[in-house]
Amino acid sequence: MKKYTRIRKKCWASLWSPRAIHYRANQGFEESGVALAVILQEMAPHEVSGVAFTVNPLAGEANELMINGAPGLGEAIVQGEIIPDQWLARKPDGAVLRFTPAPKPGQIPAVTAGYKRPLRGCLTSLQIRELAGYCLSIEKHFGGTPQDIEWSYGDGAFYFLQSRPITTLQ
Image: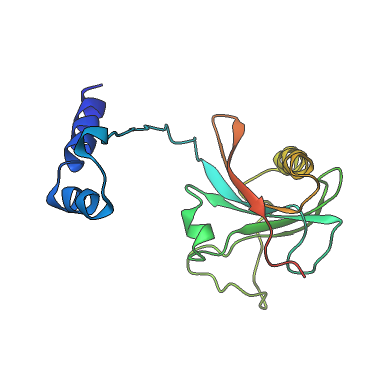
């Protein structure tokens, strides 16, 4: 609790920095009307994180979901810093159609002679089915518009961090 008190005090103090005071003066804000809201949000568990598309954006296939995942935080996937495990799942049941594992450190990320793929990735087939079901429910909630969904998994449950329309479909 002391940590949060320090954070709130730092946020409140930031209202009175020279930069903030200068900004308010230039914008015509009254000092008496200055207010601040501090929101502290707990981070979702993230044993595995990733991105799911309710339509396969690479093939434009409306009957497939594409799910990307990797251990840990999903930021590295979103920023394109790593190659994640990738699943193509069938609509509407989420059955895995194809799995492409991420290359492990030191492996060449291409199918080459002698390259052995692991049997499964960072999620099980049952978890993929569960995730696909949630993603299709999110798509339905947004009127059937295909969605780009950021998710995490931890403590035995999926968490949904963000959903937006897929912008790369033609």
